[in-house]
Amino acid sequence: MFSNYLIGLREGLEASLVVCILIAYLVKTGRRDAVKPIWAGIGVAIAIAMGFGCALEFGSQELTFQAQEALGGSLSIIAVGLVTWMVFWMRRTARNLRSELHGKLDAALKLGTGALVATAFLAVGREGLETALFVWASVHAASDGTPRPLVGVALGLATAVLLGWLFYRGALKINLAKFFTWTGGMLVVVAAGVLAYGFHDLQEADWVPGLNDLAFDISGAIPPDSWYGTLLKGVFNFQPDPTVVQVTVWALYLVPVLGLFLSPVGFASGKGKVKEPDEQGTQPSAASQA
Image (cartoon, rainbow, N blue to C red; front, side):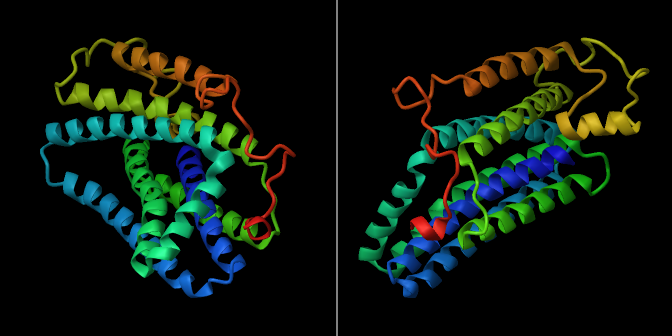
């Protein structure tokens, strides 16, 4: 449940910050008339993301077992790729996110209502589709037959909306550099578990060999149905009897990706060091800087 809460919080807060920046800029520049098209674009983006998630869930139920496992495994790998790109992208561009959105909004204001709707849709839609895919993959991996994974996602999204509103009103100041670094690192750990489970799905679909070659089996020490086994599975997608392929894939992804993400070099636009979104350590409210 915690891993799904983290996904909802992280992805939802990114979308909330985008909305805050767009709305605050329009209010600050006296263009309240353009707020409705922005909300229309946001609404369309949310509807499409939800529709995409429903299509994944209900569409897969009509498939055979092997086809379901092949689809689940393939989409899990794609989701991990997208979320990995996302955490590095946010780490690199968070400092300039505000000015980038302002520039796009200025151009859209000159073109009219349709351009405003498209700007909001594209800004929020990408986050929504990524969230829907990764949430589906994570819930598929961590599902224990209860609604807890979905409850975790819903609570994370609700928290993100609340934080975004407080941020907009100036009631909350967030150190975005530290927030995105810590949550990004934890999300990489979650993604490693989703990736390993995705390969297990592909093994069950007979796409990848080695389903019966276990790396270890500690089910006796950590029963999957125990409270601590359930906790480990919910947080890290832990499996007490993983295959050799799963352990190998998990290690080959987690070690280099987490090391690169936490290092001060590598994805900093050629500067050699990642810039912080705010040099003072605290991000002012969206409304005050729009």
